[in-house]
Length: 169
Image 1 (cartoon, rainbow, N blue to C red):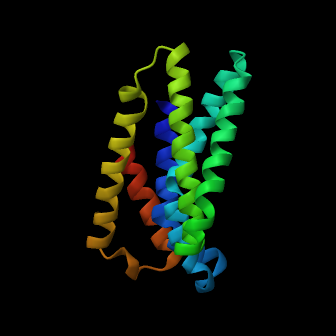
Image 2: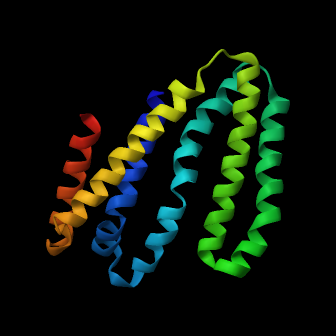
């Protein structure tokens, strides 16, 4: 639960401030990469949680489960990446990565459920719903307050502070 909350909070904050951060660090030329960063959000969040889950399976001695998990990622990625890149370009590659991550996460979750008594509703679903609602509220607040009028550095700081306060409360 904690890993899910922390990972999703950090990565959603990054997705919110990505335009300001990228413009500040790399300049306007790299702003087209922002949609790819946002599309990869499920990958970022689930990868952090999956790392913990894979380590748990390895400690329990289920190396075949980890092998099948990795093969699932590979097979789904190989099956989806070419058509999605052809249809959507670089964003299609990001979507293919998300699809393989979500499917492999489901496989891993089913395998963990077999050996560990866990409530997915309390561990994953509720935290993600809370973070999602808070993030949506933050995005609407930023747009309503027209924070985009501030300089990039100030905009980055204000968005980070407001989002952190919203998540903490």
